[in-house]
Image (cartoon, rainbow over all chains, first blue to last red):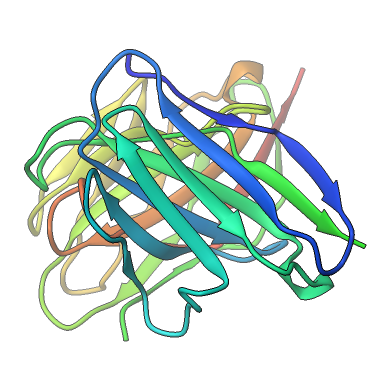
Length: 117
Length: 113
């Protein structure tokens, strides 16, 4: 089946620094990738939709200058948390859609746990 | 806005017991409904889905029926195994499974021998 990886799986950074999280589709090309955020014991919340070669579409309430998303190739999207603060500590999950239509399935990465100290 | 409510976990069962995980939704219109499963250390995987009222999704012994009148999509399995231990997420989408998904909080299932 389709595999999506994330790197790193766990990262600790100091307040004020930036951290980059990678999401890769390993065995298929993904024109569309999604970034979700999950707080403990809460739902996954969609942060943004990323289309290869174009700007990401952010959900209401998500700061686009804080969460920079780049989807430069058909197999890689990155999420950069800029000037991170403790409240940004969370579990970040990406997914990749296997086709151009909305009817295609999303495949999820295993997630990245970010801790900001 | 749209939302999904799941029963809180963890749910602990003995092997071969019957499983029900409740899921209800609030939405304007008639969304597609999904169950995803997340095994330890892995990404969410689509378990089953239903796209219209009265549809039944099924996979690996799990079933769920889209009930419009009760806005529910409860997950059931007749006989659970230890290998079913995972976190189960109910979700909805108005544009198929390939676009924005609205998730419930997830229910952890633990199956013991």
